[in-house]
Length: 199
Image (cartoon, rainbow, N blue to C red; front, side):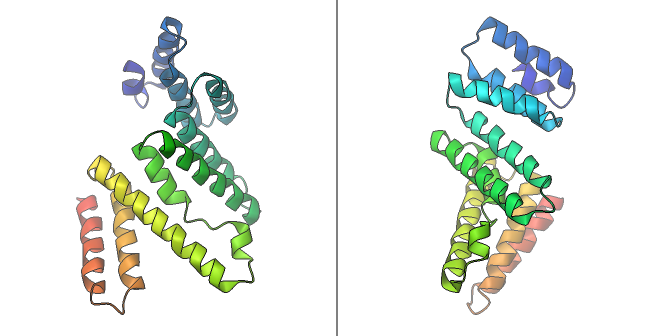
């Protein structure tokens, strides 16, 4: 509605529109989710978390979980001196995006999962079992790639940043399979994806 249309132009008026929607009908979860995401965008993480907590009492919505994932990603930035804590936040963010996807295939959840699931848990990184660590890394890359492919398909490549990351994923896939005849085609597709996103 009006609040979503104004979110980046006039955040205060956007907040007012969301609040007005809540005054009209308190049982609708979307305005609460939107207010929480608006607060998260403007670094009001405590307010955002408070609203998301209230929202859990109303309804299980994809935007609530996306908001949780976004807050956990933001929280992870504060842990720059503690890699294990940062990785823990990103792992929980991935879980929040997965919870959102259980409700609905929302493009923001697909993108969030694609970008956060590649982060290996601290226990995996310090594991003495190299085979397990290698398999966990490989499966997280597959999950990331599938999530990005689904995101690009659902948005038709409309997110320029995601299109560039998708191109990088394709290049990475080609580099990992250099021994196959498909490598040059995959790398070429990745470079074309990046060039197309630039223009």
